[in-house]
Image 1 (cartoon, rainbow over the protein chains, first blue to last red):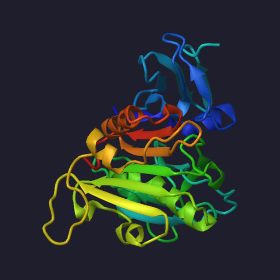
Image 2 (image 1 turned 60 degrees about the vertical axis):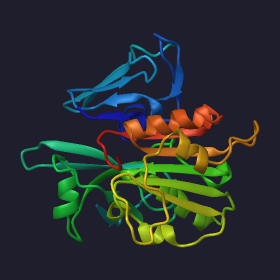
Image 3 (image 1 turned 45 degrees about the vertical axis):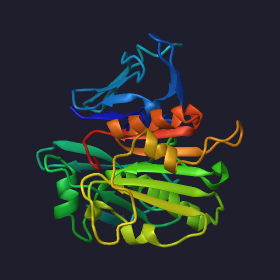
Length: 79
Length: 225
């Protein structure tokens, strides 16, 4: 499975959130590292797109698209 | 490697460093989507440079099958992190490994087009001399722009004036702008395979670069190593 970074899913993020997201800084709920989404690790080979913290590899978000519906789980992003 | 110019109706314009996504859909409905860096400057016709990956789902079609007049499904421009605009200024240290040169070429063309006087050093690592893309274009002299090439798998014996070594901390120390004082720090854009980018980003921070001014874009694979 190819490892990519957040820049490569800019299109998906824009489709889901309706705006440019890669420059947005998010904080990891596990390790509290803050970084732009563009710098995060992305695994896009599975059924969904998994976005992980570059510092501690915890899952920040999972985006799954099926039959025209998008499921977005921001489980690992600190509020 | 192939550079493809695209005629996109109602293209809203892009910024240097942005991407576009190409989606191919087979007759049975199976579709595959890939994101490509835009190779042209803002205001120029949209172009992408595609490296053929033998096991790829999208790139072999784009490099081998696509003909003038064919239509493509596109989404873009997208991205806003790995982006340079004239107002961002410099000095710029651009570091590309393999096809990681593509968005840096866009930034360089953007600098030319806008008449920016931001000083630029571009460090470009490729396997062999024939792997250097945009070679003639990059070699053209521009005031304030220094191009530094390095080859990792070839040592040409005829007239090669670049380096023949991997990019490591020592080479960065030789080629990068000095880190400078707070508020006047260089802005770095680093694009290439993951391990290449990690080496360069960590090296620049060790040299005193502000991590917030080292922008990175990483992709899988080993191009340029």
